[in-house]
Length: 181
Image (cartoon, rainbow, N blue to C red; front, side, top):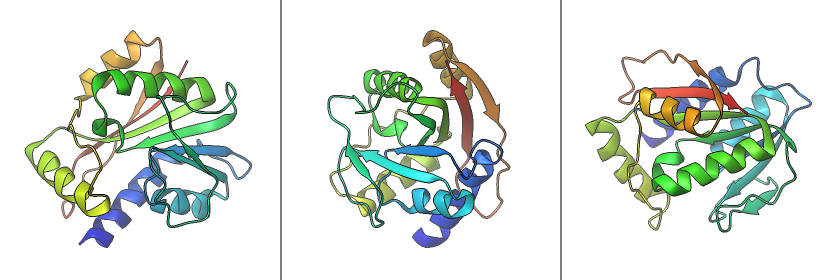
């Protein structure tokens, strides 16, 4: 079940990246976790991947950078794209804002892939997060599309929503945005 859901999710994220990542791109995966998505994106697009998270539990050999104090250790616009995949809802609101600001600072574009706020999403997220990493924080700070758009506007970020087709056999609904300053 976990592997099936991960594969579906990775393909959905890759679809959102189409046209936004070239083979010469430098991409930062913020909240990379085990690195499954990073590896899928690298293999699909041939880009150079970097990973950042609060803990290193990568299962792939990517350059890893620890997020400390809500700061990313990179120069402004160092990356062509930063990805934040199903990570923001693991942060309280002030940390979400800090990470969005940092992502927009270090990358020309930021892809945000999040789960829509539903009862099913809340329950599954708590279960799956604890399976991946027992100490992972799960405050369930999911936002609606309107909530994310208001957040981006408040931060002075321009957003483009990418529509994601809901799969009948997959229990979660996702939303995706590309933002830049």
